[in-house]
Length: 273
Image (tube, rainbow, N blue to C red; front, side, top):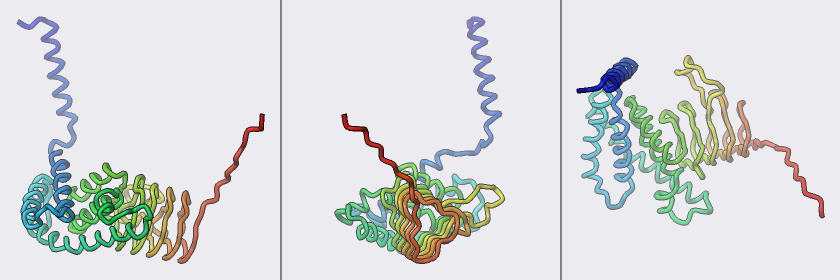
């Protein structure tokens, strides 16, 4: 027989369970989608880059993984998942070509890079760009949830937060990677280099701005140094410009400009004893 205390404990436990179930706002939230998206992302990356991974075999595996993701997303799609997948696969050669250009840009710009193999296997900036480009194509096809889960997976591993909706041109270089934030409506043209801590963000956040351009446009051949912050959907950084470290930019910058922040630095030395 249960004693009184045990009976009370069971009743309390049942009450807690009932309350938890009552407050569960999303009863159909399936966290397997998150894990399987990460598995899908890993399979994609290896299919494109690993010499020992057979492309033909993995494409069949990827299609099965993709179909499971679409089933778990539990959202109505404008077209069947097999049509979405066929269209996505047709863009993979183009995506790989862009990624190879990104790797070459890193090799050519970073004096610390010792080989092209090192770029592919050891550079977090390249990994973040890779997952962004793979997610962006799904974003363009209005695939629900999966593109964002892919870029958040890369974010967690690299510290680089690129929204899959951003538009990024050829030969993109992120050096040191950590702390970079690129918003959903940002547009980055070709041959752009950015360093750690750079933010391409919105001037302010409001839900009614959902369908508007909130993030800046960076034209070709621009370099943005560490911890610079560039904000606003109407802000355009002109081509061939340099944005110095720690700069705060909320207005457009003409082409061929140099923008820099001038800190006041004082050095105080102790008197000789």
